Amino acid sequence: MAHQSDLIADNIEQYLHQHENKELLRFITCGSVDDGKSTLIGRLLHDSKMIFEDQLAAINKDSKKHGTTGEEVDLALLVDGLQSEREQGITIDVAYRFFSTDKRKFIIADTPGHEQYTRNMATGASTADLAIILIDARHGVQTQTKRHSFITKLLGLKHIVVAINKMDLVDYSEARFNEIQAQYTEFAQQLDIQNPIFVPLSALKGDNVVNPSEHMSWYTGQPLMSLLDNIEIGDNINHQDFRLPVQYVNRPHLNFRGFCGTIAAGSISVGDAITVLPSGKTSKVKQVIQPAVNEADMQIQTAFAPMATTLTLEGEIDISRGDMLVKSDDLPQVANDYEVKLVWMNEAAMKPGKEYLIKRATSLITGRFTAIDYQVDVNTFAQSQVEDVQLNQIAQCHLHLNQAIAFDPYDQVKGTGSFIVIDKYTHATLGAGMLVKAKQSETQPGLVSESKTYSAFDKWVNRMIRKHYPEWQTKAIEEITP
Image (cartoon, rainbow, N blue to C red; front, side):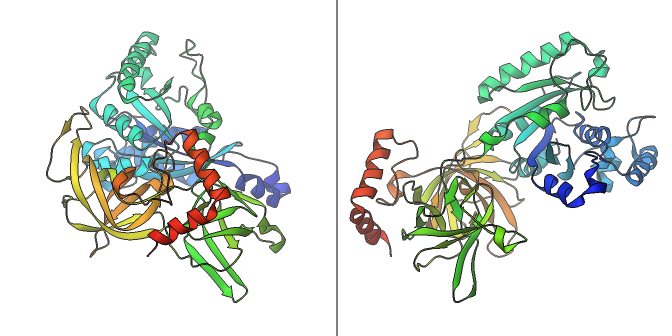
């Protein structure tokens, strides 16, 4: 296994503590069909020694039956576990695998390349910090390469690694690598993809996957594994705006009431003034409690995203699941009507006017799509007018909720700016979406800023009002609260 350490034998508790506190990186592999996504993951696991001997023996046996690599071990079979995947040599479902190094823990999502499985690819990308987009060195940038790049951009992934695979089939040509790099860079500028990182590799042979390639001395960058170990992902989390969707109210006895949830953004400390949305009630943080084995370690001064935490407050106010706790000097918008991006994932098309369940963070509200602005062709990026949204299509729509919620645009806080669409009767997941902005005419005044892009002067004025004239804020809240 990887990350072998003497601590495993000498001090297992210290080893587990070190492992528990490693940074976690979630990433996906995507790209065109047959670009080698599953093989790359298999190679990462194999060369970082994260495959058990019985697994390797099984893969050796299955390679003779299902493999597509001749005499070579077909490492793609490590993640392509479905019978139909092995028979066809393709990826259909999203496969997740875990491994770790001395520095980080990783969760990999291997996503399918076929257009008909766009929904599966979007699902895998929705929780990722980084995307590895594979390109077959023989074929260059393909339609599906563009499709998956578009979806990764839509879902807000800030880190893109372009792995130009199968370099062994083009004689490890530097000229071919440079040609594909220029192709992708030109295309990426259209999507405003910033600073993609290019790596030439051969997943089948292992060149530049975990170890540097002896065949590509002209490449002076890091191997893929080294890039994954060292890339900075701290900017993926909003550390400024505190957002805690309440998941559970913990009331074990009369003397304790805690509000539990996973912090979606920002940080919170004992003594901070907080506001409950959408009600607008205010209080101060009395305790910040984290899960811990020892009771003495439970109470801390500050918690931050993405920690799971429990807050107790000074004074008794009504808070329930689905509410959101925010700092009183940094209030998000509260609204019923939104402009959204929608990825549809069901055979039955989305029909404007039909009522659905909308799950956003911990809140579950009924709502309906009132209009479709346009549908996006993910192959050409052309926009067209449609009457409904079909399976695997992406569209910009207007969403009306039957109850106002506090939100942030998806590109600022993923946890409070994303939602899923659920069928009211079968409870099947039908689609996923991103809140782009609230329709200004429907936002609640007094509780919210006019926009998250308001000026520094506006922000200062709001703070001064809250600080010196709290009765104004209280009066506004009372006027709009049912």
